[in-house]
Image 1 (cartoon, one colour):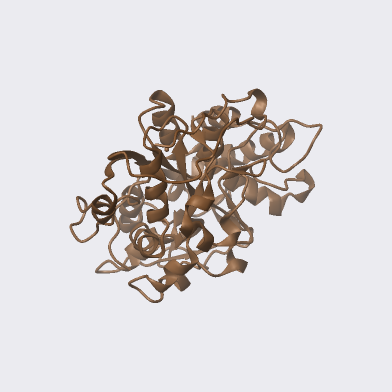
Image 2 (image 1 turned 90 degrees about the horizontal axis):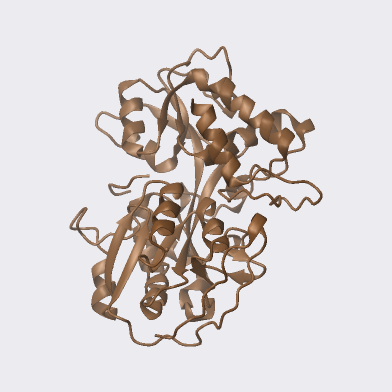
Length: 392
């Protein structure tokens, strides 16, 4: 795997209706484009760092310039470090970004707010080769309407220093044990969506709570999850968003166990000297991400937007992005194009069994996303408030 540098939205389409209250399904009134014409000359993209490289990070890493040369669509990029930052950037200037790469904990919020429009996937030829397991999911499709094109996916994993943590852990509960010998040296992701990680733990350890989906928590379930996270708080030595900060902590031994991404472990293992770390998807399963390319409902560059999305999910480009960013590609044919022939195996792109218990980030809503009726679940605003209280 190559080096990676990243941190942690013509034919005019009618706008998506404004967000409905209480998490109700949107009521779009639109006419999908039926063809794609010449590009409008420019495109503004809001993306996870590492998704839209133009050679400025590394001269050898550039899949944007060839797209610009082929289409005449000049691409400008704004990067973000978390889904919450992405939503904030989009909502404060809703006409600025034509296209956004949205993880599941932002995508539905963008749909509900009317910021993104339905997408005619028939006009994106490379959509055909997207892994079926990533299509028509609650975070990219609403009431049978596609609001974007899947791009890639990854799982949150448990990482530990093999010279400090024994025996090798296999459960998330290692990070929640009040008597943990690693107290003060535990590292976890700093975002409200981390609440779902604790919910995954309780799904396995307290089945009587009846949690079926970590993003669908009623009052009782939510209270139990928040309490578990408050109990964990004294054990935490680091809340991280910037992956380089977590690498620094593990390199120095200030952190010896924590929630991480596959690519972070691989980067540490590839250093000279190598940092002795290993990762595992714990027995309880894990949270993860599946990102979606979405189009601004107010874009004036609809043709460039469609051309851009089709290009970036093409086998050749999707392979480059996946290797640089460090995630499983969304296009099944990308595995034939990776520079490292073992990349897709390492990132489990074709391993359906691996993803069965990975709960992709999803926006929590008052209408429980697990399908329950007659009960209200905690919406994302409640998650944000609780996360602030948990961290203190």
